[in-house]
Amino acid sequence: MDIIAIDAMGGDNAPSEIVKGAVEAAKTVKYKLALVGKEDIINAELKKYQYDKDKIQVVNATEVIDNCDTPTDAIKHKKDSSMVVGLNMVKKGEAKAFVSAGNTGALLTGATVIVGRIKGVQRPALGTMLPTEKGFTLMLDAGANVDAKPEYLVQYAKMGSVYYENVIGKKAPSVGLVNIGAEREKGNAMVKEAYGLLEQAQGINFSGNTEARDITSGNVDVIVCDAFVGNVILKFMEGFGKSMLHIIKKELMAGVMSKLGALMASGAFKRLKKNYFEYDNIGGAPFLGLKGLVVKAHGSSDAGAVSGAIKQCEKFIDTDMVNKIAERL
View 1: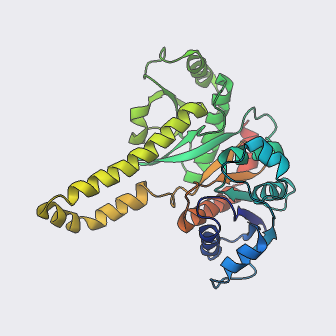
View 2 (view 1 turned 90 degrees about the vertical axis):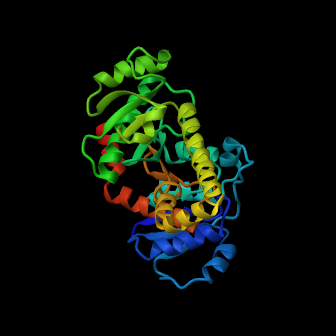
């Protein structure tokens, strides 16, 4: 049985929520799950649940990479950490995928160095699903390469198109280039050059520039940008979403009539929060362009988000995503 490895020690809520999420995912995912980390701690958490012992195993790792660790030093010196052990499982073919909510920089560094890039991929990219009016838009790069070259963005567009076609199920997804204006001549030198390359690229449905204010409309399926811009967009959307929920709640509780209205619309508000402001539906951010699957779950992921990330891996494996990206590039 193929294995999905999970970093049981990474993230703000490790190991309790990570283990709980794995137990939940094991009920429906057909692959075996390997919880990587300090086995005595993981086994103590597993004792809280009833689960199929054939579906979950524990892989011991004596060290933990913390958020305060320097990425390169952590990967180099903490070789028996849950993150490094999990990444090596993917490299050796012992696991088809690895999920971690731990140190983002260390995971990206370790994934590139240990798992390695697909032949022809210049820079792997972190892809994340952004909620929109029509569903989700895939953004690359969300945090891997702050200083990107124009040709990197073309590869992001190709990898993102393959991912969107197979995970979301939409053929020939539209691709937009994040820019400060819709006109072709807008942007800095890198973006202008990228525009020309994307226009000429084969295998993508390029729709031109996309301004940040238009991302949430959902009119474009895949958007590409360097990681500096992508991470700013991602963090702004996270913060704006939380603030809007707080503002709406404050206003609804301001008077008797608004409280009554809130009570009558409670179902709609619950759906809004579930569908657009929680990580469960998104799962995690896949690191595209590697020889194996590595998924970065949000640092504050709860059991639902961890379970979602594991289920995302199942679809990635089933659609043979690594080979499909290799073929496209």
